[in-house]
Image (tube, rainbow, N blue to C red; front, top):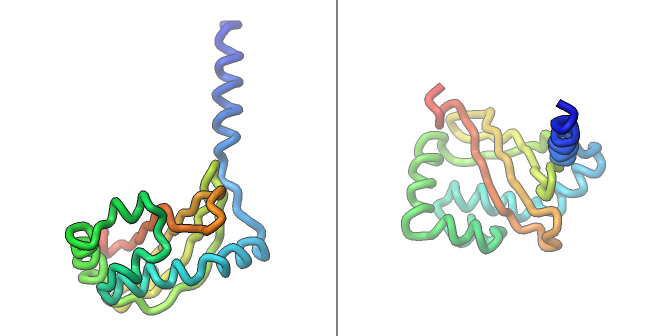
Length: 143
């Protein structure tokens, strides 16, 4: 049993390093302002079926994952086909977890006024390119 405690302590320390920290309002708003153009382009571009605008702020990895020929039209059909066009968004909070910073919005679409949008950035990227984008709605999951 004595040998197990150092391992448990190490596991607890590693988990504690990955905890989510919610940024103070002023710092969150400042970061959200820095990434605002990329986020707006991602949502408006998706809504309008404009891949170039949608992907303008993506990092290279995300650009490779969401290609203009197959993945983007599928995402457009699924998301915009279900939710309708993007209308607006408001900042809920900004979270830091490990190497990532996530900006969380409540967005309004034509058929769902309460869509959660999560936009993820590498904290080490000085250009603040989007590394992940999640659009969450009960309409999309069938709940």
